[in-house]
Length: 227
Image (cartoon, rainbow, N blue to C red):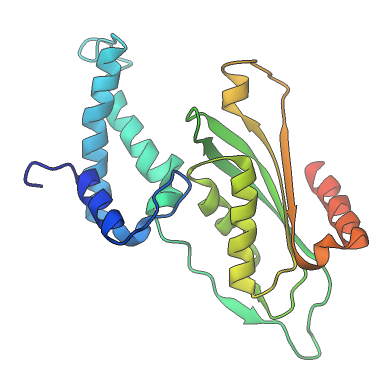
């Protein structure tokens, strides 16, 4: 890499393209598979420095040997994979004809994310609802889109909006609602240490602004959260 970290090269590509690269942004268009491997190498070196600054004996502590590389792989391939990987393939199907579905479709998805403030895990459930007008997508795709959006550094409020936007884009309808209920490591493991704390967010679009439609959605949420 001629003396430059691969992160510097990726950052240059983003700046030239005037592309934002917040923790919650997807930058997969600017990151190759080779880049991701190089990022793991780069992060391993930097996490070793972090462990050294924490005065942890990486050479003789058997529990800390290899920790830096494990952290690097976890960030790139798991916790923040939604930044570096393109969105899962989603095929949209026309919702038309005599068999056209005119009701409310509700899908539950388990999600894991990361608070961009403290890099603590966020774990919970997203309940996604749609009243289709033009297209529908496969049931598993709603969950895959939610999980792809979640695997980044983000805030729960942002995440609910992001999932809704991606569902609307892939179904060509505004009639989408997203409810998220999650536990945040930044509240469980530090600060107030609120071990029974839950955070709930809900966004509604299109027909879901109607009070009766919203009430129906929230009744589905209630049943989904009893599981």
